[in-house]
Image (cartoon, rainbow, N blue to C red):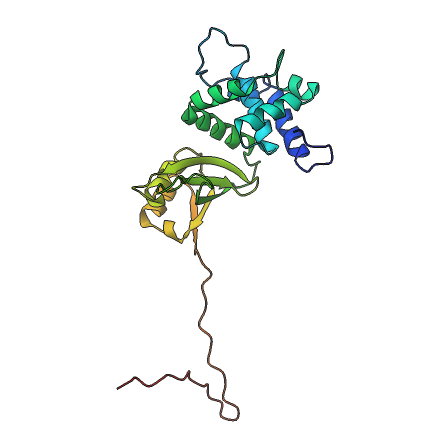
Length: 248
């Protein structure tokens, strides 16, 4: 269902539509970027451009859609101006069209294009430095029975809150070897890279220095400092903590 005009998600959808609408500008808008994806469908019988289907799906997800049916319902309820800005002409795609198209989509190619677009859209201005946080999260709802959930290592732009790139961390490995693989997909010259204590590795420091970046590892938990012994009144000395005598 479309959100009412007072809904807090409206500005986000409107901004996404504005980014998507102008496919001819330089750099291209979101629709222009999505148009570069290979279409997994057979040419015969195609009624909607791939970029249009993906644009509708993205806006629906931003609006809260969490299933193919919800995506199709959002598109069906969208107003004509929104549909027109997203490049739709004719009938709205059905649930089966969204489902089959998205299931066949090359996820790796989509991720690469989205990553390149996000980096271009968040490029720091003159004299500014990009700050990137590297962190891993397990996708909520991705676990199935005894199978663990999908774990991703992502690079987040501090200033814009945008994910610049992400890689999957396999069940037989961990985040440490994926650190350089993730950052290989991003231009990090002059950037500051923050990560938790797991990534305080000599190899990571060498990698960042070799690419002209700066690193800062943060402890996973706050460090509790030892409390200084209190002064004993009238003595000028400090008390020592009491210890229990050992049994036996």
